[in-house]
Image 1 (cartoon, rainbow, N blue to C red):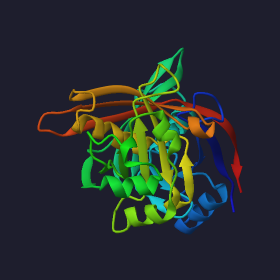
Image 2: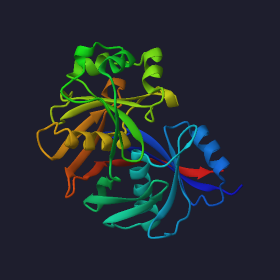
Image 3: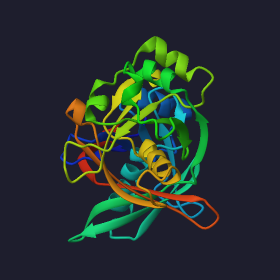
Image 4: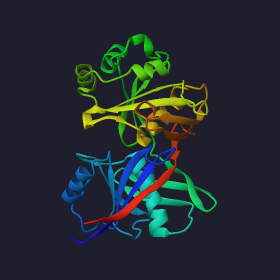
Amino acid sequence: MMGYPLYLVDVFAETKYAGNQLAVVRNASGLSVVDMQKIAREMNYSETTFIISDQERNGGYDVRIFSFDEELPFAGHPTLGTAYIIQQILIGKAVAEVKLNLKVGQIIVSFNYTEGSPDILWMKQIAPTFGRIFEVADVARALNIGEELIDQRFPVQQVSTGLPFIIVPLKNLNAVRASYIDRVGFLKLIDQAEAKSLFVFCPETYNPENQINARMFDDYHGISEDPATGSASGCLAAYLVKNRYYGAAEIDVRVEQGYEIARPSLLLLRAQEEEGGAIGVSVGGKVIMVARGELE
């Protein structure tokens, strides 16, 4: 087998080796779907991405995203991390945006630069959809916490911008810290539900510069906790606007994640209600190059 360029990046990382790591394989047209799945499993990261060709096609770059056990239509940190590699390696100069052709559709990633280097990358996510509202008692059991720790001014609801998540509003950091998956309660909660991941958040933070602390539990897919989750954060952004969490039809907030597992990450959220009632969602963060090599 020929060698394939391979890059490792940290996404949403405040410091190197803190955020959500991603492996990006380039010029992967010679790999079959089976090959890609095997490589993603061997990498054993939350996701691995494959840039199919070094050339644009249909106005963007064809990219496929694989988790440990399946191909995904969309995921947040793989989208930003792959766009960074395309800008740095394939384009090699400052550009305003890069378009990725994913299974969910075309996602646009825009770049902010500091002294000529990419600083914050932003992705515009597809229009959010809102689904099932869950019973508080069932959610509390799944998270092994008391019902009084859930902020019942707002619903526990499924939201999707390409991947569905169950968004759970908690009252404070103590509630976030206390949360952990009760397997029996969790399996009961997600039975017959499209979403299989729980994204909890509260308005109290470790870092006073941030507005929200969040945790994402994905035991169903073998990930007990994710240090940074762009797709879930996009769902959260839409949820905050829809439910007027801050009393307004738009938000601009900083979300910290991963602090409870010593992987501090920072995600930036912007969202607003647009004409006709649709909600526009953008998620931003930093990307740091960690290593590069060749996959044989």
